[in-house]
Image (cartoon, rainbow, N blue to C red; front, side):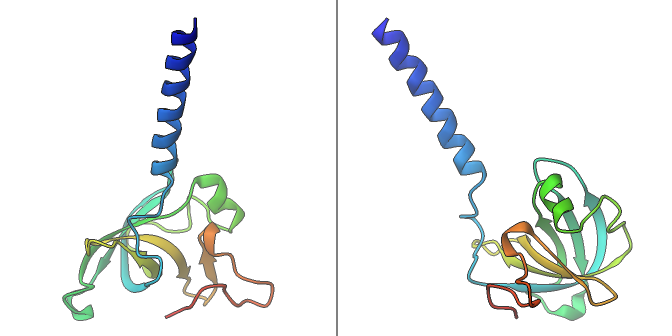
Length: 139
């Protein structure tokens, strides 16, 4: 009986480690931001994380030009921040501020977007303060 309980506990704990790693932001450099100004090529409004692809023109320079994958939060979290499945569609212009991957690949964790009317939509981990300021530095 003790061996069975030990095995069950080991399986449970190993699953918790995998779940924790999935929700880690360790692959992103949360001390840096990149500003991506381009066009939405795809907007995936689904769990476990929303994603969108942003095509940044060559005129942005070698470091930024290309297609970027931007990861947002879960649908329910994004809804609480004012997002919807219709916030963007392919072809829409987009201005994104995000935390880049540490390895330099063209992927990032969403910080916020600036809509054409100037409104900012934040990812849940970067909620604006009541006065409109944000808790971490903006570029």
